[in-house]
Amino acid sequence: LIRFFPEFALTHTFSLHTTQSANRNIMSSSPIYTSISPGPGGKKQGIDGFSTTMKMCLAFVAGLATMANINSFTSSPSASLASCNDNPGVSIRTPTRMSTTSSSIDASASTSLSASTSSMSTSARISDSYSNSPIPITDNNVQQGLSDEEIFYQTAQSLEPVTDKVSSHTYHVMYGQFLLPFYRRKPNMRFFEIGLGCDMNYGPGASVALWRKLIPQAEIWEGEYDAECVENAKRNGMLNDINVVTGDQGDVNVLDDWIRQMNGGEFDVVIDDGGHDNCQIWTTFQKFWPLLKPGGLYFIEGTYTC
Picture (cartoon, one colour):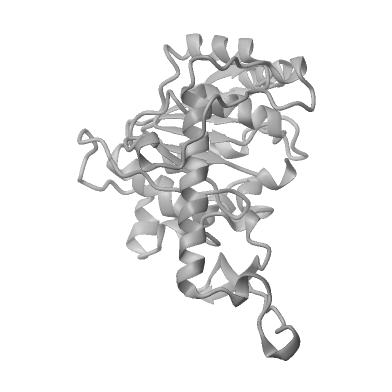
């Protein structure tokens, strides 16, 4: 539970450290568990006082309930989906049912992933159409024997500007563990990231430059709120080989239009690095999760801001 739901584990934090190896800096994350002082009589308090078996049971039940809840929210035909502005501060969808039995969970569901401040789960099924022959992402890095986390981090650090995925966060961990191996299996994947970076102090396109380096054969789509910024980026040649849609991700009509422009909106990988508002994230998830291809990956960045 702590590994897959770090923001819910109050005794779990991430620390950043830099290691020196072969004249290269590698940023990584390591878990640190804060101790809980024993209560009166030396008896441990809180979850630390539970047995390992009890902790495992609690983690299993929590995960099962979470997946059942997501399944009921995204699959119920009778539930209506509203835009964020229609119901500010109000839950936008009410589940008609929530079952904690395994029969209610879609075994072929795609993968939902986030790290450092997001949740992770892995899919039980990968499409047979994926290639088993790995392709090099960066020849020089592969020859150096780097891990995929190191490849992601060092490639990002080599670009200007450096994306906040590695400068402010440690997202190279989750992308190195999941995205890069996925790309090797399916280099022609359809890839959609929400958030071009128009509101960043270094300007838009930092992650786009990184995707060009790391997943050059993928069909890349970007979603961005600021249409004027997108037009300026196009005029500057920044988005020549990138498909872009614009609008508010919290508006269901905008999302429906995006899906039409995307010829159905089916993707292998979705990254939500957009407005980071709870309603925006949830509205987008309800639209694009059901369209994710079997075995696909769904990343949500920055859930700590919700």
